[in-house]
Image: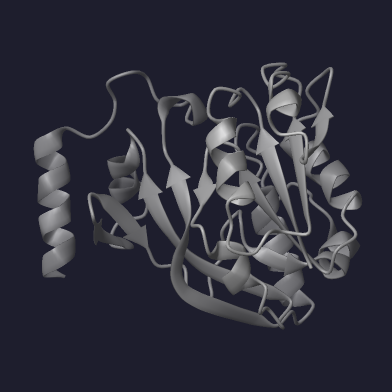
Length: 225
């Protein structure tokens, strides 16, 4: 019923964690597709995880073309994309398998060395959660939403904003699906662990994460709100 596409670019050192989170699900996805978009740091994975299907690109296509190509390979009713630096809760696929709408969203647990940067990026949208941050995404977009494959394929991945660094290709998909009256449901569960780290935020220089005392002040303010 569900294909999971794992997308990697320079995340070869983190990808095994993501793959294992899918292989250890309480209900396995129908298919796992892994794509390395030309970074060439994932050649060790096929021998370790032979049940996963791999696309190891010789050159970088860029996010939009890479995602569009991978979406075209999906044949199951539903699909979701996940970054190879992130991972899923062990019962995520089981819960998502009950989907009946065109889009199914769910909440996110923000973790990683730069997790507190989310407090300034989306102020007031997260709350402390066992040392991490819980991001409520009820009926809202995120890059790993589950969506009906045929519907998504009709629209395709395209650039929403031409800002170069952040193409917002999944926002375009969300916007266009809603414009075409896609049905949306949400699970009040933190199913995705979203790892924020310096490798996936090239705009940051080492040491630019918020100072610890500022983080505590922001957390206190969030709790008091």
